[in-house]
Structure formats: structure tokens, C-alpha cells
Length: 542
Ligand code: G1P
Ligand code: ZN
Image 1 (cartoon, rainbow, N blue to C red):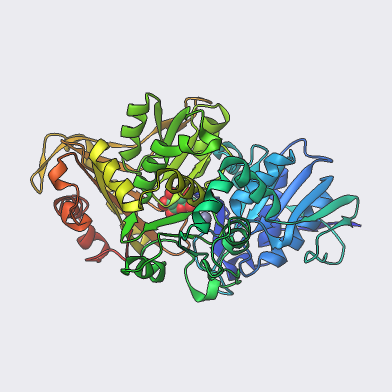
Image 2: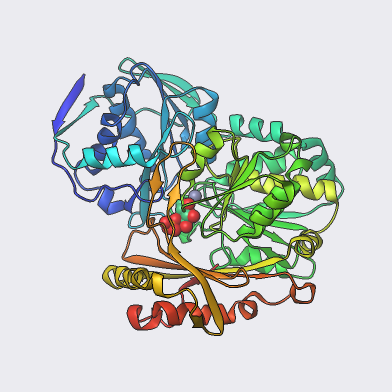
């Protein structure tokens, strides 16, 4: 029986950079989940009888929300739901399932790299039939609906058992509980030279993969250990836990410190990698060398043709604006287009769908390709492995050669977390007001060449997204970028992105903080960070 339940709108259900994210207790308010899910359905058309994919990263509250979403999907008239066993689907795996089975769309439950647990973060995001995050047109419609919603519909039925692979019924909707790993592993096998990777591991290649007690554990164990023959124990923290073992499942040098330290030891494995809460981010560390995500994107693009799935070459490369310009130089050399988009994976979807770009990446440890419509942590790891298997060189040697060929983009991101929202907005407003006066002025010895508030004009659908980050470009190819995070759940997070381009062969091996010192102080002076936020140092440097 379908129940119609009266409800009242919440005023804070605006999806951010990647869906709606709030603390779990916030999501547990009466009808909070139901209002948002109904608003998603109310913003879509033509899904009657079609398939909806549902899965999440296994964090606290995942199971409860899946049951609600299933009963509401049945009431809304979907014909079939595909759910990962135990409610698990990594974000890239969900994207793949949507595409492979021609689903109408999918609901992904995740707060990505944010911590999980009864008082930590949760998130809900809608992906469209191309497998990618809903574009702003849809997220705006969902938000508008959340402001006016008066009722939701739900099937009155007991919870389903999602722990066994099976086909179940929920009213007239069929529910298929699927193996969350199988389709994804098959896709990876179609893109990469698994026999060559197997031979590399058989030859003694050693790797450490930190799944951070998050969703990639089962995927990495199946692919790296079971299919490719990496030694047992290669995958660390491989069991997904609802609270990620109390850690932030964020694969950066702060939260994946243990892996970093292992990789800096003298007898370190050949290759180290990690992924985040929902499996779409990656961290790459060679023996004794951390590869910045921006450099990783450039390196992957330059060498992708070595993997069977990309043997035909790349159509183009896309990167988010704050990501370093390292990939631009690769695109130039390959004679292909480089697209600069706002932060957030949703902006890559049109470029991938239109066949304009093959590989995309963000400085925030996200890389991916046209194989799905999300960034993909394990994909990046496997492409790296494929390149290592072909080139038979160390990560360090490959990075060094790359910098000698293209120059090096020294890069860091400084995050000031949980700052007062008014102070953060004031800082950005003040910068914006000064943009026109900056060109030609000198800051910490650097001359400003141009300054703007980044706006993106989508070449495929013609839409414009304004106010996507303040850019201050200096003569010589260095720059600082300021923007406020769109994924945080408490206060505001100021992100300062700092980049210096260096082509002098004698200066390619500097410590990043030394290479960036003058730019860091220019950023502080320009944005008045300490006086406006009360902070004298960033909380996280990546
Ligand atoms: C952050 C990252 C961005 C990424 C997003 C979702 O968004 O900066 O690159 O796409 O998470 O993983 P932000 O908090 O900066 O808005
Ligand atoms: Zn993520």
C-alpha cells in the first residue's frame, strides 16, 4: 500500500559541490531524508517503469536511508531498483552500473572523504542516466522543490534483506541485490593489461594500498590481490566500517600519513596508493616520492596510450580551474584541447558525453576518464600500474623525466577549515572588489599579470557558471586561487591554491614549501587571511 504523508519544507536542502551533505543528526530530523528524496523524484520526468540504482559507501545511516529510498522509489513508480549487496556501491561502481544497465539514474549515499559515524557526515546525491552527477539545472530544480514540498509518498512495507544477492519485490517494483564489485572489476579488466600487471606482481613488484576502512576495500582486494596476484596484505584497512575506524577517509598526506611514512622508508614498496570514503579519489606515492594529484593527472595523460583502453590516444584533457597547469603542457604537446572547468566533477560530464575529453582531473585527488562519469580512485591506481608495467621505471624516475620534458608545476593547497562564514564571505568579497586594481601591482616581489573571478562557459550546452573562484595570475606562470568549499558541513572552509611553474632544469628538485614561499606570503597579504579569519596557519596542507 502506498502512503501519502504530509510534510513541511526545510530551508537548507541546497545541494553543494557534490549533493546534499549534513551531519547525521541533521539528516535524522523528521522527514528530512524523505523530503529530499521526494524532491529528487518530483524534479524528474519519465522514469515510470524504469530502473534506479541505489548504493552508498557503507557509512553510518547508509542502511536506513537505502530502505527509505527503496520504498519511496517503489511508490514513485520505478519498475526496478538495483542495489549493491549490503547497500554498498562505490561512487565509480554506481556510475558504471547506471551506464551498463541503462538505468534512468541513481541515488548515491555518501559524504565522500568526510568522516562517518552517528555524529559525523552523511550525504545524498542524484546521478543521471549518463552515470554522472546531476547537472546544476537538476540540482537547482531539486532545491526549488525542497522549498515547496507538502507531501511525500512511500510504500508501506517491511525492510528488505539486502545482505544476500537476490531478486526481491517491493510492491510492483523489482529489487535486484547485485554484487557491488563484479561489474566494476570487469570494466577495469577491459581497460588495462591485466596479464602484464599480473606478471609485474609475479616478478616481485610490491605495493601498499590503503582503503582507509572505506568502500574500496572489497574492490581493491578483488582486483589487486585476487585477480592480479598482489601479495595478501597489499590492501590495508580493507574492511568498510560505518565510522571508517574513526578516521577521515581522505587520501591526503594528513589523513593517509601512515601510508606516506611507509612509502618514505628505505625499503618501501614500489608503489603506494589510497582511496577515499566512496572510492572516487586517489593518492599516489612512489618509493620516496609523493605525486601531487595535479602532476598525476598530467603524468597519466602523457602515458595513457600505454594502456589498452587508451591506445587510440586522448580526445582532450579537462581539469578543474584550481588544478595546476601541468596537464595543459601535456595537452599542448599532444596537440589536443585542454578544458578548464569549475570545481566539481559534474562539469566534466558534458565534455565526456560529447567526446571532447577522455581524461579529467582535479587537484583534490580526483582523476578519471570517459569509462564512467565520476572520478575513479582505483582506475587511477590501475592506470599508474599499467604505465609502471610498460615503462619498467620507478615512480620517481618517471616523474623526473616528466618534469625535465615539461617543466614542473610546484603546487600546494592550504585549507582553513571551520572558519566563521561571515568572515570567509567578507574575505572573498573584499578580494573580488579589488580585482580590477590588481594587474600591474607587485606582491612579495611578484607582478600581477591578471586577476578575475572565474566563470565557465560550457562549450556543449552553452550554460554559464559564474563566481567559481578568485584567480590571481602572476607574470611567469605562477598563480594563487581562492575559493570557499562547497562540501563542508560546519562553518566555512577557505581553500587557497598556490602554484609556481618552473622550467629551469637546475630548479626541478626543490622542496615544495621552499618553491612556493613567496607565493604563500603574497596570498596571505593579498587576502588578509590572518586578520580576517584569526588563523595564522592552515589546518590542512595538501
Ligand atoms: C571538494 C573538492 C572538489 C571535489 C569535491 C567533491 O569540493 O575541492 O575538487 O570535486 O570536493 O569530491 P569543495 O569542498 O572544494 O567544494
Ligand atoms: Zn569521494
